Image (cartoon, rainbow, N blue to C red):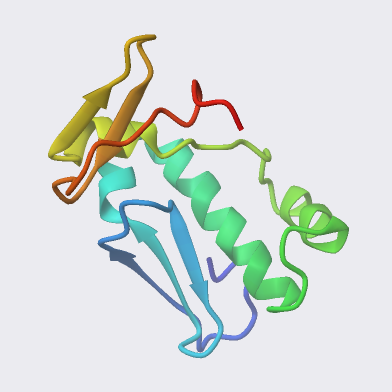
Length: 123
């Protein structure tokens, strides 16, 4: 991380995020990665997430995932891969639903009602 961020005030840590891979907190100058992601992915995948968040730190909060962010991310070695979050959910979500067409749905809290499958429901 220090290789890319000259400002030594930035720190790194793990968090309990289950619905996202990483987080760049501009106010705290802290980059975090989900401990659950780290448990189900390779070190290389975790490092890609760290690079993704470092790119956010480098370009600032207004850039989002725009062209400037992507160019910066690629410059530091980010491969622009997407994680669905299903890897974490399959391992840690306590509630699993399966629609008649075989689509899996994961919940971290017990559902209070029946849900329709967003893949199958007509919009």
